[in-house]
Image (cartoon, rainbow, N blue to C red; front, side, top):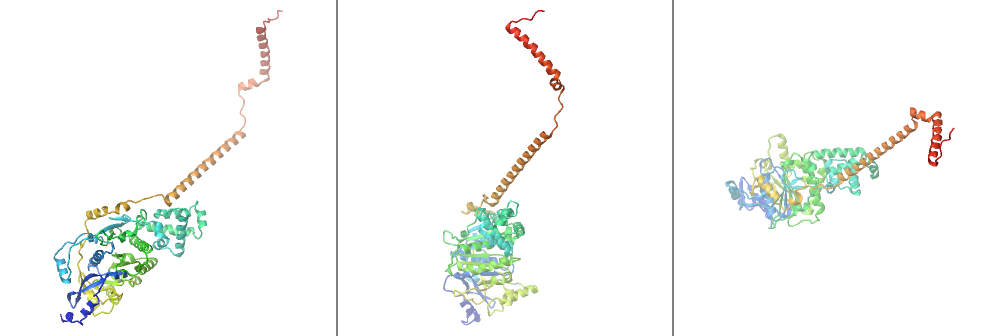
Length: 526
């Protein structure tokens, strides 16, 4: 084609925007005027992966394969990767792909030297829900601020929850799981705890009731499984394998895809924990870690304003810690505008325009791209599977020209591994013995339950003693006030004067008889 060979052609101008000098990930070959140009490679600079990104497109257009392609190259470049696997179809990154005719054809079209390869992987689950090493957090480490956001508390209620955390800390009541937090709140509004409630100030029984109801709703989302011990150390996600490749951490989420609040809770905690632990590093030659959140619309659909504000702030700031975040979803409008504005790298697969809403979304998507020689509305509806419109940040941080691209094929298995292989991988991990079994040590719930049981036992004992004393007093009073009983016939006879006189007479005569027998005296003869 004359346009593609002309040095001044748009194809060359686009390709020149991707001719980076430093390390870069190979995404695919430029598409121009209906042809694939394998000598014009579309790439993304490795240092720019911490500037975040978006992979979007309609169902079946190849988003997950793009995620897999980028994750593989990051791992190969020594960068750890975190994959949130909602549908359970990216576990295949741990196993070599299966060569076939389609892969060979795609590799030839885009100038790829394809070799089957698996990548070092660990598999995790949220609190043991589903297959994987359980990831848990304690209520204390989650903290009152994040807890208030996921419970959707207002500012006054958030302050009250902060007081509850402070009280628990001051009293040595460890908040490990949700039943610990519930026990502390319930205690503070109980008869025994009302005095304590007044002592910490600012917490009303009405507010405590709101918090308890919010906790109940949260638990119904499955949150009880996420909170507990042993608490997961998020630095485990920053590891590399023995051969220097970055470890791919796959969070298996098929079992919780109907629990979006649990997923968003985990995301908030994970990003906040990493942000708090990692030092400021600015721009690095390669990121410390790159996240990919598949089916990102589940994160934001129905999310509270507080959650959106938290995600926006975290995405904006965590870049300076060397962390990149990619959202994978169907259309850019699934991601809030303030978050979307932070995503410097874009891979947009085909969009459909079957309905007026689809057409509106298409026009909105086109407006988010820089000016280009393409007719993007027509292009975005005509892209094939595994093709995308791409713009990334150059090594200098400026947006690259918009490039229609035929993407490379992943080298790992494009699909899930078998259940037996997944289970074997989980149980053979060095982390499995450390995190597999939950630990329920003595904490706030047990301590408060023990104190309440002791208080109830003491109250019962005091009540029993008081009742016994009352009965004894009543018995004594009854004895004093009771009438004397009538004397018996024997008592009447013995007590009579005649009986006493007779007794004296008998006694005198008997005494005389005894004296005579002793002293030898005899009866006087008449």
